[in-house]
Image (cartoon, rainbow, N blue to C red; front, side, top):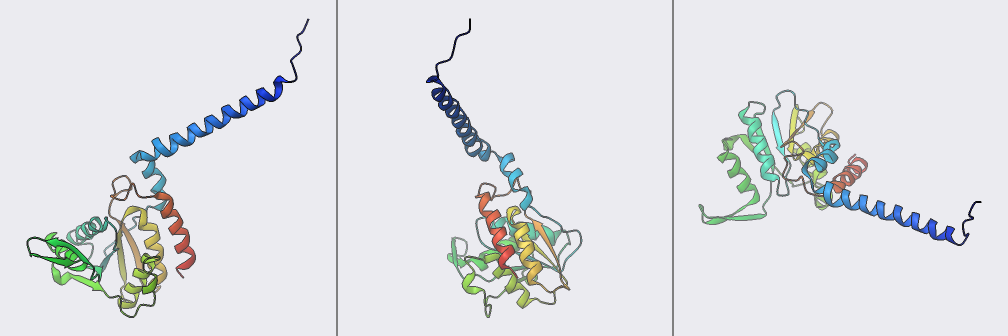
Length: 224
């Protein structure tokens, strides 16, 4: 003799099953967003498609992308290239923004002055450091939104005959910076990019990764 199931129990069983699935999905999302995304190896793995470091031969000049707390990491990478004999000069953006107070000089320096002093302290001769002016650049008003594209445009306007330039920037920014300089510079100029660190070691490792992918998409559409 077989027992028949009460039909009124079927909706309750279906709701219980859906509730278990929902709880499992919430648990997985929590694990990914809270546990995995807080680990160095997982965030580095997610950012690897953004990473490019394709310098294979010597270049005349290295341009250091400005902005952010990783600026000094990029300057250090450019100084390494100079000491290895891979470049002849280091180019930085002109920046009159007041930087931190210098207790040795007993005065505040501009961000540009501090960057030059930092490079000199790292052994780069001051006569091998050049600055890129913002004057006459039509992209100036868009600097805060499209800073990398503006910097590439400014460099192209001032050094259009450079046969080979290498861009020193942070690992998550390398593909975007390479895109900007390749589109801004003449076809006769070879553009390389040098990552200041590996993805798992960079000082920008715990910045929002999704934002970098979004920026790359925007730059791909706008940088023409």
